[in-house]
Each structure stands twice: as C-alpha cells, then as structure tokens.
Length: 270
Image 1 (tube, helix red, strand yellow):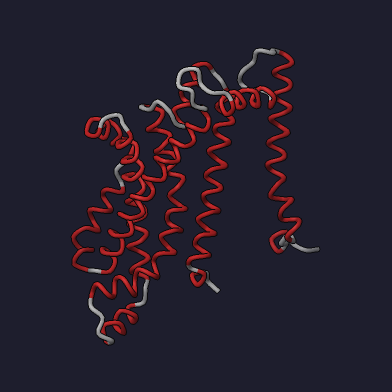
Image 2 (cartoon, rainbow, N blue to C red; image 1 turned 135 degrees about the vertical axis):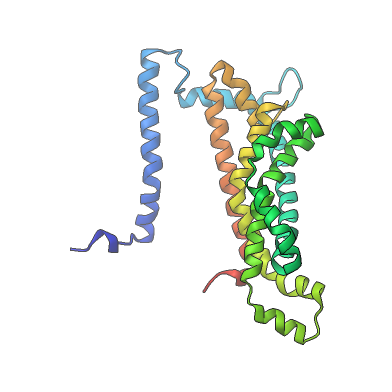
C-alpha cells in the first residue's frame, strides 16, 4: 500500500483537490445563509447572493446622486492609483538602497543598521505623523504604502545583491569596469527579477496599508467604502468588496509573475 507521504496527485486531481476547499467554504456559507434568512429575513450577517448582486449592481451600474460617478469603479480606480504609486516608489527606493548597501561595503556599513531599525518600526504607527506632515490628501496615503514596504524590498535586494558571486565583480574589474559599470551592467540585471519577486511578496502588506489609510481619511476607495457601510452592517457590500480586493491581489500576483518570466526568462532555476 502506497504511503500518503509518497502520494503526489496528478495534474487533474491536483486541480480538483485545490478547488475542493473553496467549494466546501461556499457550501457552508450558502447553507448557513439560508438558515439564518429563513429564521430572520432581515438578517444582515450572512446575506444571500441575490442581495449581494443587487447591492453591487447598484454601486457598479447606477450613478451616485451626489457625484454622478459609479461608486464601485471610482473606488477601484482610486485605490489602484494609490497602491500603484506607493508600490512604484517603494520598488525604486528599495532597489536603489538595496543594491548600494549590498554592493558597496562603505555604504552597507553606514546604512544597513539604520535600514534594519527602520524596518522594525510599525508603519501604521506613523500614520498620524504622515497626516500631520502631509495632510489628509493623497500624499499621506501613498507615503504610508511606500514607507511600509520599502524596508522589506530594500533588505531583500541587499541580500540578493550580496548573493551574487564575488568572482563576477573581480572579472568585471579585470576587464576594466568601474564601480558604476559594475552596478549597472553586472549587478542590476541579476537583481531585477528578484525585485519583481520582492514586490509580489510585499503586495499583501501594501493592500493592508492602503485599506488602513483609506479607512481613516478618504472620501473614496475600496477601504473607505468598506468602513463607511460597516456602520449599517451592510455585509451585502462588504463581502463583495473583500472578494474584489482578493481577486485584484491575485490577478496582480499572476501578472507580475508573467511579466518576470517574459522580461527575464533566464532567472528560473533549472
């Protein structure tokens, strides 16, 4: 009899096994929702799918009487803009700081300890400071995302840079390369695919900081909408918004992975 530890499901079976937990969770939700609504039709904790569909249709396809915008799409656009700007700034800063501290010992000795200390500061604790310094506008929200994930990316880039064999640097210097040429032509191409992987890993934290900032001070955005309707216990809006955020995060992760494979097909381990 084959031991369980040695059993590896085939491709089709693996897909079904991966789908099974989602089907079970969906079934549990539907059963409990039906039971609660049968007992109390006004129950808001576990809304029926029809209730969620009606709410999302209203938010996505009916213009707001106040602004004329479609709330669902305007919330999505606002949140993605903030997230994109914050992640882009963090990626640029993290790449620059990580490569410099990892490649140049004098800079590493000076700034690596500071980078470690900064990475230990809870970014959400800085949110009131950011609101005081930058106000309640877009800058403070983008800054929170950038500050929150830059240390992680920078430390990862520093480690990845130091993993590059020293022999490559010696060979480049033997061929007459100076410091800037080594950084740009030897180190940078090798850490770029690692940067995309690092951004993928930091997106979860980026979403967290985005939702937190929007929940406290915003007039639009996915996080703003979730915390706006919670006072009315509108789970028919909250649950679809959470599912939408999850789907967006999943799609971004896949898109970055595909981008990495297309731009740097050689980075995969054989």
